[in-house]
Length: 175
Image (cartoon, rainbow, N blue to C red):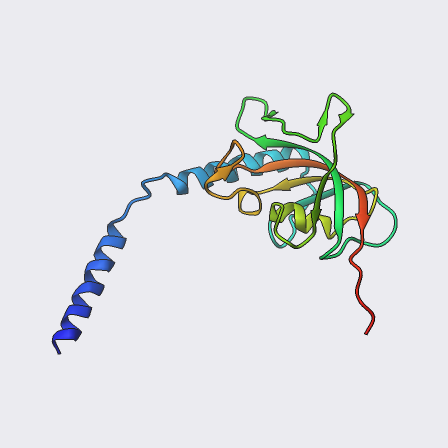
């Protein structure tokens, strides 16, 4: 009986502590701000585009050729990335690597589905073929999440321009 009282007291204490916790890190406010910026950007630039079930916005700008990329395929892409941030005219800032003044750098290479890239990019790759060009609007939960990384703040939606350069299909052994 004593153990039951102690367990009940601990449970009650935990409930009181958790219910009184405030959003000390401002996560709710930051997420709300991200969604407002995302909604404004989509309304202005892609009003007729619906997000995929995951929340990814995929806008194909040039169709590729060959087979669709699948999980396990190794691919090389060229890309540019911007962070969507609030400004007076909805401009994008914080350009990242991939293209610079029209010059291509080495392509970014990864195996689709291994988790070595952000999940929004890996998902988008499965809609693409060699030569496909697409614009991606990737909410933070499919990019760098609440905490951010690589100099990108948490709760930041990314815009990517992607071109599939090469595809090395996974080889399935014969049975």
